[in-house]
Image 1: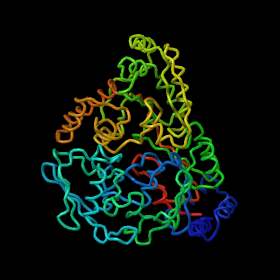
Image 2: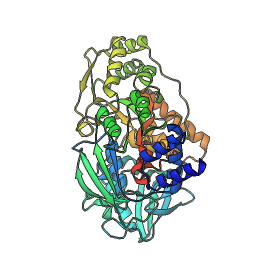
Image 3: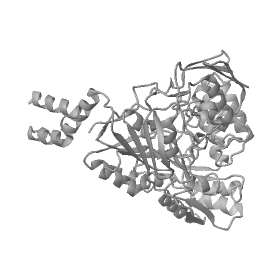
Image 4: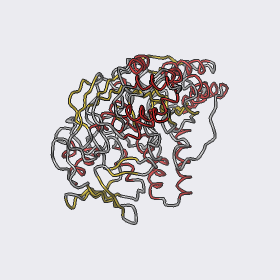
Length: 529
């Protein structure tokens, strides 16, 4: 029997017999479906990556107003798009460190003020042009320029000078020390482009494993394998097709019907049921992602401290985790930092308190309803979460009016534009990067308009602090400032829940805690069926 099973596993792994035939013959030998599935998965992985075929991804988050300029990437769809055609200087490693991409190595001066990146020898853009240090320099110049709208702008504050002493050496000199500087270079906005993208930022020309062949933004994009990519250990499929499917039900149906091979953001309330379907595996991972309600602190009524405190005390966080996440997540505490960060300090947990909420609401003098905008495109179950918030706030005498916005255009017309809405953050690798991207007063993506001089001073000082205990306390103090004075209402940290067809192989559990293997799933997985 063992010989027969080994024969079946090898031939199925190599595609010589179909999966259907493998399961049928394994069942005839008395092997259960679950055991057969495990055997096949192990055999396929052991056989190694198979080249060719098409991987189809059903992805949530995109809209017709999206731009191919990586500087403007603001949702999961755009994060996946730029990952396919582009690469930053470095990327997150499985162990929490960094791997070289466009840069093969980096080093620092003893005071962590000067950082040197060595450009990978022989690496080329998809248009055939050799990558030089000047391209890296121009990329950071564009993202940090006076007129930029880049989501990475906040990360690049504090750069004193950029230089390229030769074609393979790129140097960043800082005003003050920053031990986390290389992590900032892994930001997905900072894809290295020819001349930094100054000539055509939307050309989608980079050093990634795929080349964009067609793009109907918010609908469908097609990528073909870059034959000259420098790393042959990734990019196994000949073609990757992205289908933007913002409706949760439709996205799950596309996976179940075989229209796509993988989807992000499986609705938590149906994840267990979806995972029971034959040929589908649910992959969930905890991490720094969080579903939030954000208010602009520079606009009324949210400029009123008592209004903000009333809203924060009117939130039932446990209920959100239970009913919206179905347990696929943890309770939030009105800060963007949780235990997934290495220098995390637990703060006193804020809980639902209708008496305190009512006290602050009355003290604020506000009587008109607060308008909250939401959409399924902001996070799975967002309209339901808004309704739960409306109900718990009403019990405290606080009126909330809900306006459901169209999915298309949410990230360009509502988020970071309207004063109160539902949103999400995928998190960042370090506290410095998360705080710098969204809470530094000068950050372009400061979507709560948080402006706190003490916070800014602590953030800059923490970068140069080499004493771990002191640095940890500084981050705790920053978290407290955001929690008590900011416009962030964070009821929950979400697990990343993806659905993957068993027709694919190569999923790795060790990848950083972001969805779709940090958006490398269609790049590192392969068609096994």
